[in-house]
Image (cartoon, rainbow, N blue to C red):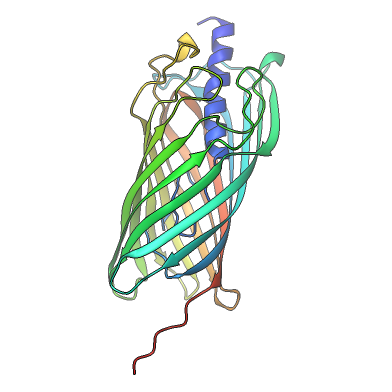
Length: 315
């Protein structure tokens, strides 16, 4: 592979990862895991009714990229840093015997920095990214289990300039279909395992004939309540690209290359009852990577329950 081709491959795969991170969802229900490590041990849980204000951030760093076979690319001095932060709202209601109804939306801001020992591949961007909307998610909450299923989309509201590589938008619509759940070891819900599976259907990019392949992703983990307010656990993720990238403007070096990655790491969540707030942090390492950078992801966030319905009283 010639040096120019290597540079083009590195640039495109790194941008695809970082821009995916910039489309950063914020949902108290832990739905919309476009970003790896965006959700953790509560991925498939169903929250209680209320209005939630959420902040989610993620930081991805990498100094190595892998080709379609999982082998390291000879990219000297590669340094990738992608940071995204989003503030959003989520609303959950439970109308009688019906399933829980969940709605959410957020708008992220992101920064992407890519450098290598070649001036043509240095990038440093900052700005708003694409809008995330979850028009509906259904949930069922049992004594020792939760089940969730929903639909969300990412609208190309962020700036996207395909010919100049500027802006933090992805330039296309993404439709996301999700299903998941959680299992608890007892009715007290002190320990659990949870998983959320999503299928991402990507449309054609605006202003350029490229269509990103569709993705299948799983995120989740297991946790145990260490104290009345602290939960310790292990979180993980897996992503497979299930269809090829396509389009007349797609570089030849990327044709037939499908992204794959797995990740695993610790998570700590803390509940602060007096503030009606929950905060969490997780750190996960990539492995089994193909056709993308390999690195580590720090995810963190807070969820504030701004409103809760008045409990029903029996007559």
